[in-house]
Length: 107
Image (cartoon, rainbow, N blue to C red):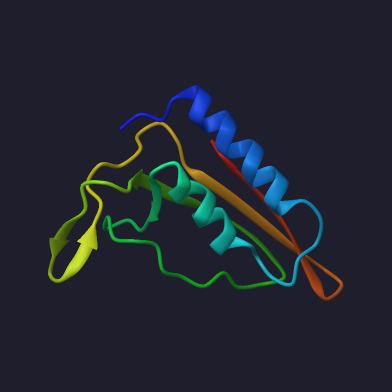
């Protein structure tokens, strides 16, 4: 699946609004909700839904995306075979005092 430029722009605007300012933690749940509203899931390398922990006072990650529709069961787990081939979720975080600044966008 290829992500259209219009969809990417819409997602990035909403993600930017969500991540403005400082938060108690990395706002990955809110970012996932924004992506889901456009039919996109954050996935792991094996095609299953993302499940992970972000550690450290600062860091970055690039996460794969896939179409939410079309999930199939593999070993009892939903997998999403229709990967987005032209975009990733880019996530960077920094600890500022007792809060986190999150910078995120769909590449």
